[in-house]
Length: 116
Length: 116
DNA sequence: CTGTATCCCCCTCGATACTG
DNA sequence: CAGTATCGAGGGGGATACAG
Image 1 (cartoon, chains in turn purple, red, green, brown):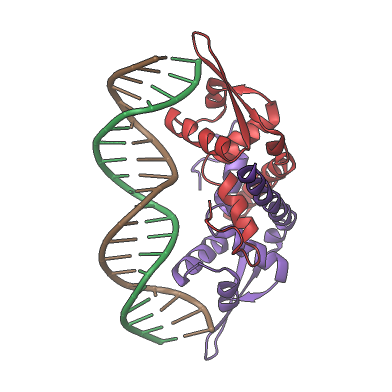
Image 2 (cartoon, each protein chain N blue to C red):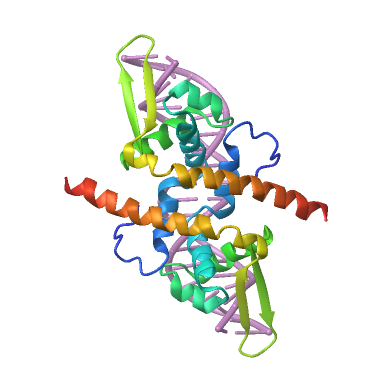
């Protein structure tokens, strides 16, 4: 997080947004929660190939910290922890779906470029 | 860039998109180009406080490499280099403005959280 | 003005093993 | 099942100096 959000003369709100939802995994995590609602830790892991436990825990904590996702622990054995978007996190949905759509276009474009 | 874009079972197109436009500076660079059109190296630098020459050059090269921005060198002294979005880069515009809007909401939300 | 070239630190991230 | 602990490699990123 930037120390002083007020020294953002022009387009740096974009930077702030990128810090919140950017990085290697956050986008994928958020997309799945936006797409499917409530998901357990293990369900998220299955949906994000390549991520390991450490990273998943790590990123989930950061998203929880800034109020984008909610974490619910059930005191049962075996343990069960649910993750979902908060009310504020829901405001990300249009962005995430647009991001996904653009990502598909981007992949197609890269393929077209490499084939020319 | 991910090696095999095809091993993206579910929401990983979001990951791919984040790799292309994510990171500390790319969002800001793209936003300014989307907002103002053609900008010179030095103009970009002035608009992105905190970035240094190395990083600006670095990120511009990456964006150029994947076909999002176009670089035009004018053989004059002193040198002049223009940057602008490519036709494909233009498809990012709605995303960037939405990103900026959400970033503002996010900043407000963080302030509200810390004041509660 | 628009870059390269070095140097180096830190922090992210991955692999693996272990725990309640 | 859902984590934590530890270690280590790698690269992102900054400061500075130099070049065309």
